[in-house]
Image (tube, rainbow, N blue to C red; front, side, top):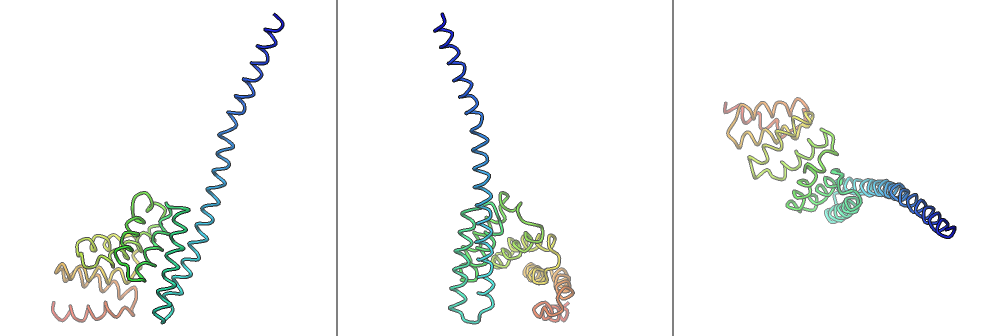
Length: 209
């Protein structure tokens, strides 16, 4: 009888220890995962900053070979950032800009499509999404309707981009909507008086209206 009670007591104690251990696992696991997640995000931002700096250097150099080399390195840093934090749209946008700088328009368009997808676009501010839409419209300029939809949405989200209004004017011209094109070009010039393309378009259109 005493032996039975001892066995039962030991079983109860062991069961309690096991339950407490199991209960503590999720918390420990959550702590580790949270630390790993924060570390990954920090590393992703680090690669993004390096990539952005490389892209800026690529745009500022007049040496074509160096420009391509720097843009390629920027794309590689963007890929590293994406691998660590795939839901951050800014890294996909950086990759798109770096690929476009190398002349890879199709790949750049694919990267922008990912950046503007529902899963990742929510990480962008309205202005950032407007800029991304403008860039996608610029790449898709040959596809009038698709480009028009993007740039029209772009100026609604970010109304201070003269280049976007200039592109909107071009889209309206391609759709043979001259009055709307004039309005868009005028808006571009109001935002940036030095927007030569918009000024020239206005002179040309106003002489035919």
